[in-house]
Image 1 (cartoon, rainbow, N blue to C red):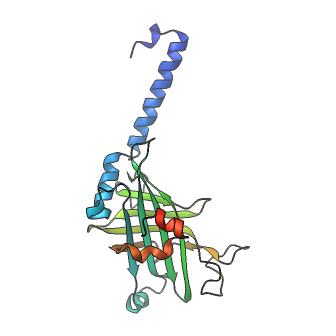
Image 2 (image 1 turned 30 degrees about the horizontal axis):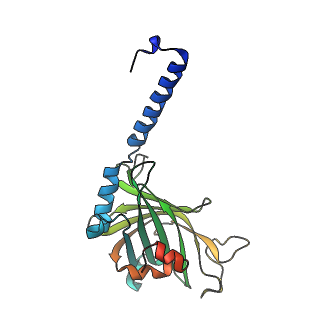
Image 3 (image 1 turned 45 degrees about the vertical axis):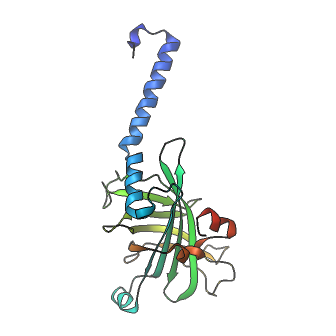
Length: 227
C-alpha cells in the first residue's frame, strides 16, 4: 500500500476503508471461523457423507430407567438432533447448517421440538469449558435460545450443550398439561432450561428416518433431506 502521507484526501479515505475491511476479515478468522474448521466438523459428524454439500444426519439418545434413577434431576428422557448442511455461503465461503431439536420429558407424554439455523463451525474463543474446541452454534429465532454442538470423541457422535431453548408441541398433542415454563398465551410452547443434569448430552448417529417427526410439514421434510 502507498504511504498514507502521499495520498489525496479521497484516496486516503479509500485506503482507510480498505484497511478497516482487512482488519474485520482478520477478526473473523481470529474468532475461529474458517472453511477448514467447517470441513473438520463435517468429517467428524457426517462420516462418509462429509463430502456431500447437502448432507443430513440424525442423532439420538434415549435414557433407560436405571440412568434416570441415578440422575433424578434430569428432565430429558429422549433427545433427537438433526443437522443439515446447507452448502457454501457466498459471503463467508463456509458452509452453514440448519438444525432440528426434539425431546421427551419425564412425566409428560408429549413430544417437543424446535429448530433454526447454525454455523458456520468455529473454534470457541469465549472463556469456559468449550474454549478452544471445535463447535457449531445453533439458535432459534426471536430469542429462542439454542444449543452448541461439539463433535464427540468417536466419529458420528455429538455432544450437545444446552443452556436454554424454546420448545413446542403440536397443537392437540398428547399432553393436557402446559409445556415446561409455558408462555402465558400459549400452553403448547415453553422453554427447556439446562438444569443440573440437562446441560450436556452425548448422542450417536442413527438412520435419518428416526428424525422424521422433527419436520414441521412435507415441505420442511424435503428441505431437510428426510426422504
